[in-house]
Amino acid sequence: MKENEKETGVQNPAHKLLGKLQENRKSLHIARVPDKTKEAFMALAEEEFCGDYGMALKWLIDDIPGQDIRMFASQIEDHERRIQELESRKPENNEIPEETGKKMLDGTKRDERRPKKK
Image 1 (tube, one colour):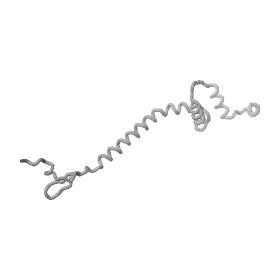
Image 2 (image 1 turned 60 degrees about the vertical axis):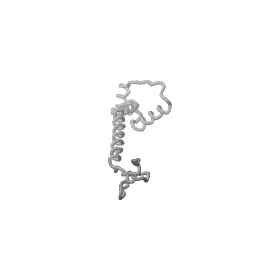
Image 3 (image 1 turned 90 degrees about the vertical axis):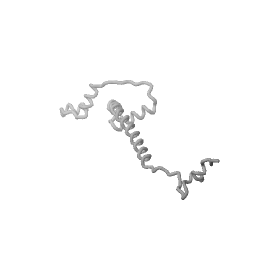
């Protein structure tokens, strides 16, 4: 590769970028990461960020506030739905009207529930 660069005098732009990244290399070491978590992070970095762990970590950190907002928005939507359901319910009429008075749920008339005066 370097022989080709020497011959033509032109460097591939991808190689220039790779060289700059290696010059500016920073490092981070994290211990005690569960295997499945590590594998998931590495897969995310490989699929979404071409193996750039730094950008994958940055993306995850930047998205944390968004996760909280989405969680609260979801809870608010649930509460709004419940409120609408409660407001849309019609009050139940537990009494059945009758000619002489009202009949209660147990089948007795309202007047029959009162003790008779002697």
